[in-house]
Image (cartoon, rainbow, N blue to C red; front, top):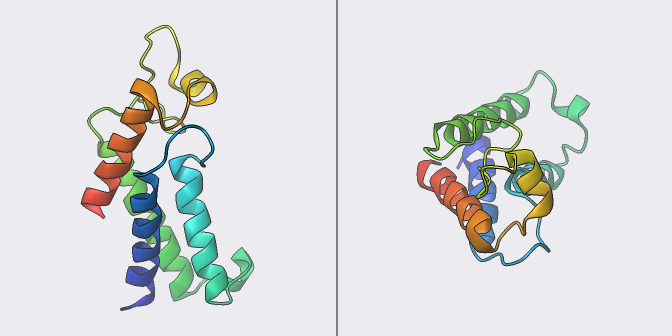
Length: 124
């Protein structure tokens, strides 16, 4: 398995774990994927962004980030706000405010987050 596929697999494992999340004691999906990629890079002794500049590892990281971003943007329920793609269940609450006020993995909002997670997994 090449570097890119191995990193992608690491992100998939994290997203599969997210499908079991309940409540608010877990990171958001983007943070979870970022942590997964960081842990993967540290595992390969690539601790700092400078250490991966102009390299295959850097290109793989950027490629995976762009791929995930494209899947998020292609999700049929995307809120239209890149930083907060999960729509609010309440029309009077913005997607940003929903992220900061609703439980991340419970209720209607949580179900939508998990749908986004599944959408990313199905496409990775």
